[in-house]
Length: 257
Length: 235
Image (cartoon, rainbow over all chains, first blue to last red; front, side, top):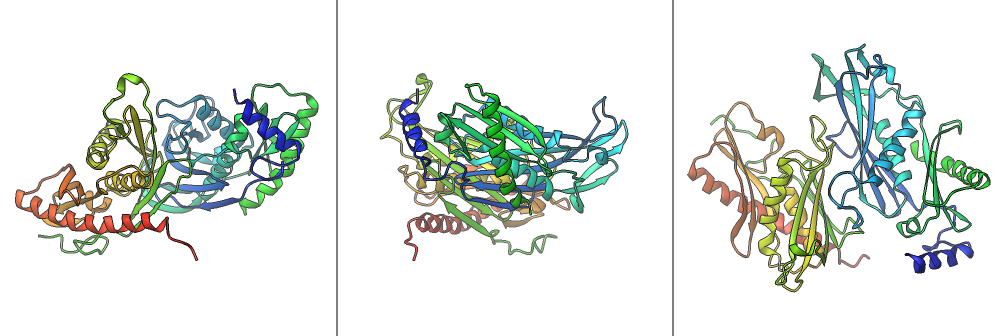
């Protein structure tokens, strides 16, 4: 379907240059901002090239899950707003927004980023729920990495609201941060033809053969993965993609400081 | 009359601080950011483009569609559940009614212009901020317009007329509060949005509309300045 575009992008990649002039393992300019949404308990925006993602944290209290009576809960949700791209439509969550939310969720959850045990108010009865919403304002590729970074920054920015008679008093802000144990960084590597690239723009995502999102903890342990795209990958290819992801995750980690 | 001084110290006819910018969403045909006090609105315009399904098409002119949405973390209290609600649908409708009179889509039969309004942070007056942003985004998209539309709320807090209520005023508990969001089209000298809840005497309402007009004229100046700023040559 997108043969012309694919040919064009591949022609450039064969010369070791991207459609937009970048190197294959080069991210676009990244900028971050935290605490920008005053109505959220925590927030951050991440801009990578023309992709802008806003993440916000809200707290609720409720009953724990029956199998984890002494632990708080967490939920990640993504809204692919039609405001942010002509590709998105209003309506029920698309499969893309569900995948994005679940991939970001997995990195946070499986790395034990949030100390859920410390979010217990009364065992078996009342626990904190952390709800993180991802909302892109403009999308030009690489929503996965931008969203994962925005969510982590928003969690780090979050301050717990005050609890009064087992209800949240949203008006009273406290200085108490979320109990955090880890800082996972996600990097998505795309395979187009025989080339591996990071930080794809939308045009590159349109012609991908496969993609691999890998999340790493501080000590470079892999804590979550997601393969996407229609083409399968060999062991060697997976290893190469992980190696590239690990290298780039160290660069992204700088933005957490 | 007990409400002698506004809770945030403003004069009774004083707007909150406004920031406005256009072209903030590169993917869109036109876009705008409008911040008034702590209420922030983004608007993006996509189109004119062919309208599907085709039975909705009008062979005489293009259609304007408006969508108002609060982001889940945009309320000071509980998280706002994503997806359309009765409230957001009604606001989308009145936003359309506020903007449609100035939009001229006769040159684009069978097409649609979509306006998406998103609010990342709110402190009352969100529909008005949305309309202000949408009006700028439409102009930024190069849609033929008869004028800009400005919107603000006026109200009576415990009998005192005030311009541009924030949430604390809207929820003032020591007296009656009337909240009246209005949109105004200067060149028509007409109002295209008028809603109200609370209690107010007719005389006060008419005075309030005058107050709103004055406020909106100031807002329109800010909108125009932001639109012009996009084309200023940077030195």
